[in-house]
Image (cartoon, rainbow, N blue to C red; front, side, top):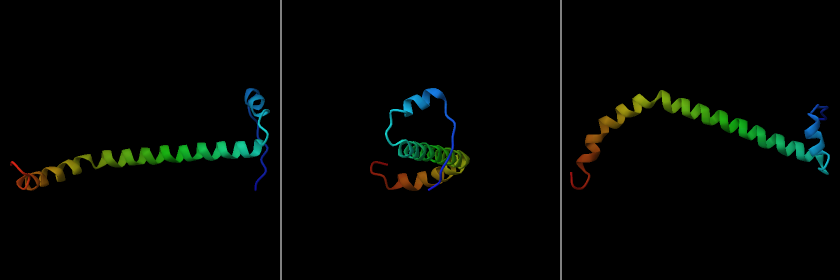
Length: 75
């Protein structure tokens, strides 16, 4: 376990003064925010990857469209 000395704005310190276990509260809040940051980065990377392969995906879809529709009922 690490011990930190941090500075926070007065209004947050006032809100925190009502919390009985400040260390646990801050640790949980940090875990939640760090998880959200990692998820946003993962989402950004996935979007970037999908955008880069968009043209290739469309090309592959077009190649297979005729073969797929050949066996589709009513075609």
